[in-house]
Image 1 (cartoon, rainbow, N blue to C red):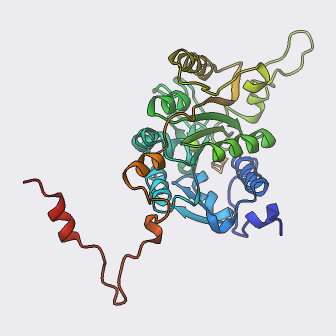
Image 2 (cartoon, helix red, strand yellow):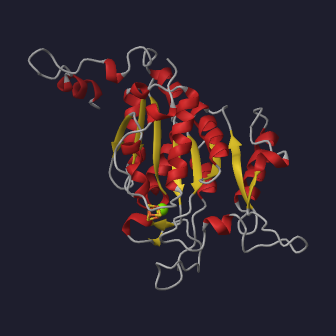
Image 3 (cartoon, rainbow, N blue to C red):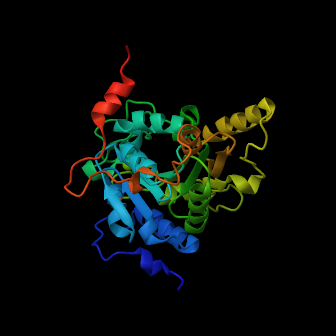
Length: 323
Ligand code: SF4
Ligand code: MG
């Protein structure tokens, strides 16, 4: 029997603020899982700490709400132990690009095969709206006593530098587009970043829904709002690296850089870069352990009938000893 969107919901009370962009991201993820008919028993949503960290509680699947900044180590461990599981990592910009930035870079180098969805609102919403790593220099939201003294991180460029092979940006209030991006990120063979612009109506009074819709940015002639967010694919942009030719790669990186730096009156969303020509971490492991996918760690016995561990650590130490 086909799974319905209600099959991906839970009855856990949701205490996100009214109008929060988190609701859009949660709905888009539930729509994506429904469209893909992803089995809840084969899906694991892993989160860090923050408002967005509560997401696994609201999705009927396996889920772990981990520590601040530790979503990626945990999600990588889950995926490595059970490579057949549909793993989805979620978390905030403060969580993933502040305390978790080292893990963001480390995981990028591995090109491990799952998507990481960042709920990007420019603030630490759960702790009263301090400036997060994606708030721009000199911006002063209503929760800050003084303008932000730090430059912002560009998650898209950081992702490329770290080694992510799918780099995309969505918008929390364009559900259908976001759902399509989530599906592409899940289907991508490799590590995928999906940075989602998400208004926080409680603490960020700069990057609001009205600001993204251009309500302060009127067309001179018609006096109609000119939305800041536009879709890359509607401009003929092709993010895919099609060949191993260095010239092709250079072209794709140059266009990624130019579009990722656009901000202000024009903000692109869509897929900026996709390269499935880089081996995934699974493929790298298979070179060393050919039966890894047949007998992944999650299917290996770890103790005997009496509960004693089966691993012979003394033998392992002996084998690895350098003489
Ligand atoms: Fe959403 Fe901001 Fe409220 Fe957190 S504080 S639930 S991000 S509106
Ligand atoms: Mg945040």
